[in-house]
Image 1: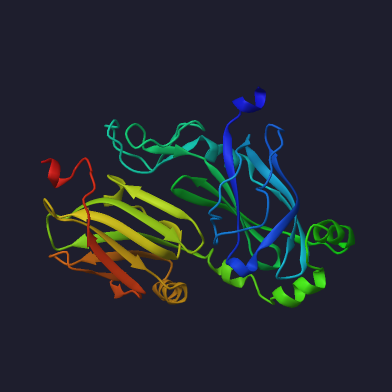
Image 2 (image 1 turned 180 degrees about the horizontal axis):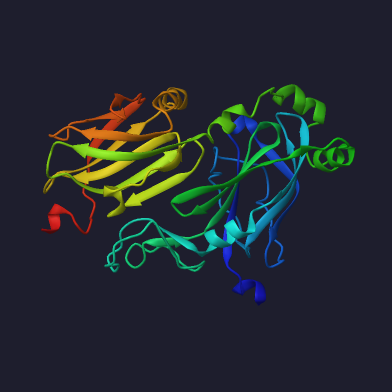
Length: 332
């Protein structure tokens, strides 16, 4: 009965790509309340920062992890003993992040409110969502990143380092006794010599903000969603979208935004980025900047600039849409 009253959360275990999966052998998520919590059954899946799989709800407040796992492509057992920053965890556990507009909320939206762990998103009633998922990402060489997910918002909690298990005979026996392949056979088929540098580099941040502009005086912004290469996710709504603050952000992987310039003139713009090219541009610009998305007056396209200089983009897309927003021209 006591466990049912504790707040719930999901757990995901992810990897960079499908040929870089790892398998937990022994695991425990440490909670502030002292109740047991664990990782999902089986191996990692999905992509960096999201496994794409659900799992039985765990309970309590996660403050650490004790995980022994086998990296199949490295032929290595690792042990992770991670202590999460407790005060930081307590702070995030009080937060509920805005996800989208809701019809029954008349007050201006904020990035987040301190509403506690019980706020669950409902489009008609509540635009805020509290902590929902603890996400692990297992990279090469024992690099482990942990994120906190608030439904559509994802924030990196920290990077942790697992240690190689030197005497792994008992672990080998325990792990491979359940498989139809030997360790040598797996190594021959799966072994990769790969660094964790790519995923460490994704964590590089610069001080910048996205800015949407147009010579069309009727421009009205509604929503922006940013996905970063470091697997963080950000949602920016009205009125914040008109005055986004500069802060430390990773390199954007994808950015999409919704705007109007009149009735039946609502659009979504999307931009996709290459990490190497974007990172080089940020380095050259210094450590502070505006990433401007300049929409054509007739909404036919947009250009991207960093501090006034052309910014490299892999591709851009624009298409019309018909979503409902409080300040839409359709409601006037």
